[in-house]
Amino acid sequence: MARKILQTVHETAKGLHEAGVMDTRTMREFDVLCLQPVKALNAAQIRRLRTRNRVSQAVFAAYLNTSLSTVQKWECGQKRPNGPSLKLLNLVEQMGLELLA
Image (cartoon, rainbow, N blue to C red; front, side, top):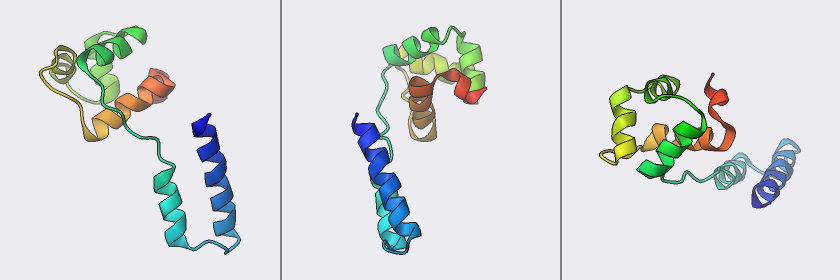
């Protein structure tokens, strides 16, 4: 529900910007405020995400453009995804692995 409200507010702000009522700086601030937060994922959550998509660690790594050893380390807790990898995992969690096909 909150996501839908943010989306509506963002569309309204976009319309105001296009009409010349809102300046570019303010529009950029709205853009940032409306971004979905990236949540940290632990080893069990990453494993569940992969198994829910019914792929092996090797196939999951290929979809994410990372190495098999990285996925293995994420799933056993030796390493934690961050930056672009974490954002990508969040997107896969929300929209499914088909997003990357």
